[in-house]
Length: 250
Ligand SMILES: [Zn+2]
Image 1 (cartoon, rainbow, N blue to C red):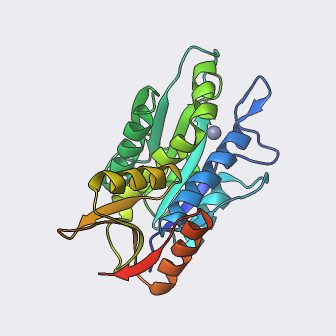
Image 2 (image 1 turned 45 degrees about the vertical axis):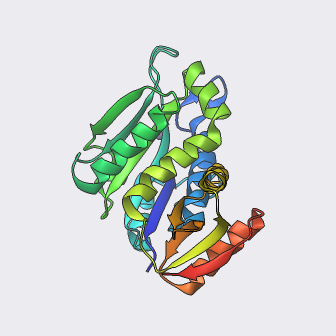
């Protein structure tokens, strides 16, 4: 069974979340959640979205949706706000208790986002948040910068794809790799530099890959996947993105 992540876009519908100069948190949350989910799916993770449209559910309903999906991890996407605009900026990730896997993933996400220039405000414990308290699996809530910070908004818009990748990578590092006997080979090179170039291109498109050297050739591999069906699904997405593919098994 593939690893499953519930991806929750915070707020929605009649609940806009924080609003700053007409910019609504619910819209940023949804766009980012969908992109994080897309990257996770491209890397063989099953994704359950709590919403894919501008609709309202209570945090309790969202937590229950996550629980019913049987997800292994619950990730809620939000943006932060402060009473006085443009005084605070940076990213933080909230957990019910900072321990175990959820603490590790939270820290990895913060570090990845900090590498894009965000201030890392740390991992913080919150006992009063329903999506952290009522979920039955490890859960975290990412505050992807302050929506009332012009600086954070500029970075959010300019580096949107890199931000989604940073969050997805924090999750994938912890849960999805290596694993699986099937992989999708996207390149075979004599030159390591060429293999690295393809790996960078894949990363820009949201695919995690590894490079395997058999003494003569450098193989660029995406995955592991537990079943051939999952590998075929990932292969289809890679082909849609213009990659040449070959399914291999280890
Ligand atoms: Zn929020």
